[in-house]
Image (tube, rainbow, N blue to C red; front, side, top):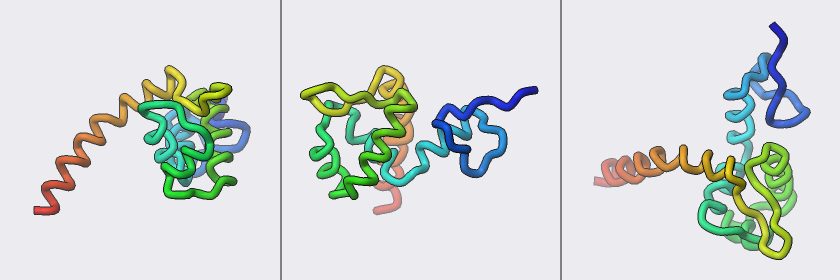
Length: 113
C-alpha cells in the first residue's frame, strides 16, 4: 500500500512515518499558536495586526508562518481588505472544537470550586 500524502504540506509529519491524515492534522494543530489563530478567527475576519493583538502579541514571524501553513492546508484564506478568515473547511474544524470548548468551561468551574 502506498504511503498517504502529507496533507499538512511538503514537510514530513512530526511523530509519524505514515503521514496519515489524522497525524498530519494533529501535527498542524499542535504547532505553536495554530489553535489560537483558528480560535481567534472563529467569529470574524482579522487583519494580521489584529490577529497578533488577539494572540497576546505573538511574534509576527510565527503568526505569518502559521497563517501560511493554515492557508496551504485550506483552513484559512486572506480576503483583500478584510484580513484573514476561516474557510468553510476551517469553520467545519472550528465546529468540531465546540464540544471541547463547552467541556473546558464545565471543567474549569468544577476545579475552581
